[in-house]
Image (cartoon, rainbow, N blue to C red):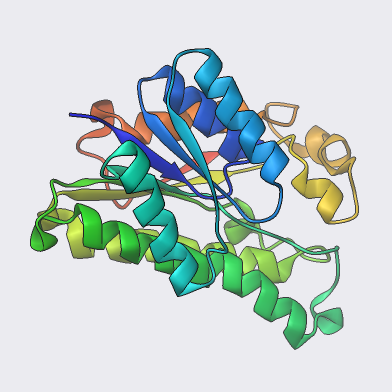
Length: 248
């Protein structure tokens, strides 16, 4: 069976690393991006250079019409989606809760929570045996922030990722009998561009001494965890949240 994975937020960081590794493992790869077309096309070129097939599609995962178009375009070009990596996520500049306004909350929750739900729902409608599908796997990318709370930095982001954890557990139980496994990964301090978006590019270096393994992680290390959860080696794993955090 042709394996097709759709990765939201696939143009950089964990999403891009997952896209490249998935292609190495034989998946056809749909790369969703919001704004950076050049970065998404660069990921597609990397995949095509090693003989893989990939497609970059622009979509705002917080918009229903964009999500439906995203899935339809990937299916039309690559085949039915058999795996979803719900990776798209944003944060804003470090702030305390008493400095966060409704506009910021709306932006963060629209991508991180609404987007995750909409993409999961679209995937279920295409994968579930209830709808005539053949099953599949959904991996939601959460964060250790969901557990640690990110005080003084991103409590809103942490709360959004806690919602993703709940989505993972609830949806897993909802669709287990319909041929779909749903799992989550919770990355810890990972070397990606997201820290610069929060206003502190050196955040990983500052906090790394507090990690039991003594360092930040790489996007590739998270990608390996995601690909294992997508694989048949994890066939009895669902509703599980896998921490990829160096023990932090």
